[in-house]
Length: 191
Image (cartoon, helix red, strand yellow):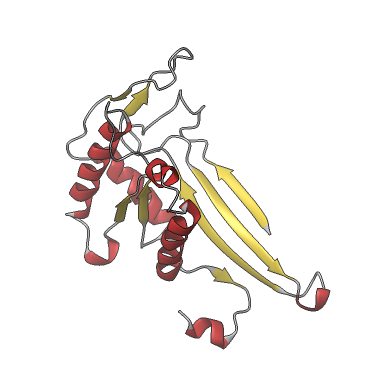
């Protein structure tokens, strides 16, 4: 198993100092992760089969910032400006479509409910922007948007984060597929 992470140089920075998106549509800390699996059939390192799957993660593509104060455990989050036409976010997703094609799953892992709003400020604006963008996209290119509270799932002992994430992974793989160097007909029939 090999994991390869490629970090974009377009809007890179440290976690609390670089957030959101820029005017060109580059999301902060955009990282592409490729998982490559090599199965050496019969033990021969040259022969065998390869499979690969690529996913990306990045900061939520909105104009937002977070105070970087080491004295505050949970610094406030601010939406710097509201882009009513979602111009930069549309540029961002156009870049994602060019790199990967459709379909796209935007999985929002931030908190959905808070007594003192921090993450939810960005989450609500992200959902609004996703709905706006999807209103103009053809059916086959609509972005699947799922808001799933990762922290809430962690808090409930009856729920398994891995099991929940497996559902999203399965959904994604069924729609996007993955590379396989020598698939057997039976494996192809499963899709």
